[in-house]
Amino acid sequence: MAIIAISRGTFSGGEALAKCVAERVGYPCLSREANLEEAAKTYGVPTRDLAAAMERRPSFWQRVVGERSAYLIFVRAALCEHAQADNLVYHGLVGHLLLPGISHVLRVRVIADLDYRIKAASAERKRGYPEALAYIEKADRERRQWVRFLFDVEWDDPHLYDLIVNLSRVSLDMACATVARLTEQDEFKATPESRKAMANLALGSRVSAQLALDPRTSGVAVEVVAEDGIVTITGETRWQPVKDAIHTVARDVDGVKEVRSEVRFIPSVPST
Image (cartoon, rainbow, N blue to C red; front, side):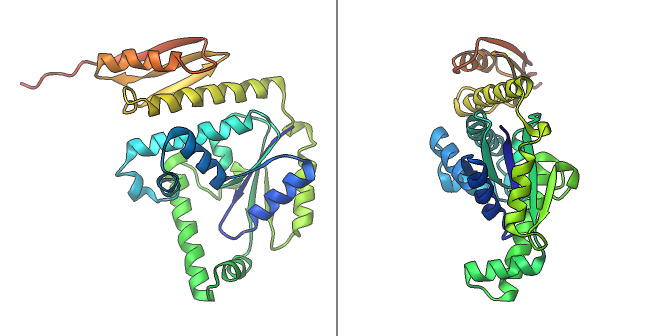
């Protein structure tokens, strides 16, 4: 079983490919939009706010750095809950970057020639050529900035993907068959080690989400690493009650066996 992460640009045909692959291999299909809605519901964030935050360019994020971190954590935690089942097709913007270190993630990027995308945009949105072109260029520009800002990578870097499919050159059926065939290869089959890595990522994400959600710890930037139920948390805080609360919140997360808090308490230096 594999996790198929299909990165789709605006009107490039990625959604159609994802649905085709899911039907062919018998996997559930999860869209970025559905995952956002689930994350919003689970963590009590308005769906429109979460969706807007996950699409806005850096100027927006620079005004709400804390919210940026929390929202990204919530989205990753929601996706991890689905991905633990292995057999999943996810389609959205660079979804595989939300699942780092998981070897059975098949990373697919869907591209298409500009004319193909403009025709698709014009047909769906009832826009003329200039308006469709402007919409696509704006969406591409903002998404490229978003990925660069959050993950420090270039969205279109081919090294981020295992397969790049141009639906202007390859039929949907051929692309679908190719992706499905790749899931049968040993390189993308889940192993005990990769399943363990997925379970660790999911647990760490749940702990991070609870820390971001709890008002006692929501403002603290920490790093959470899980290994077989043992959670190690590193970071810094100037408030001892926050340091204590981090341990308490993490300990109560389902699946946590032990918490090793390495959060350093750095007392504030009184002004003179």
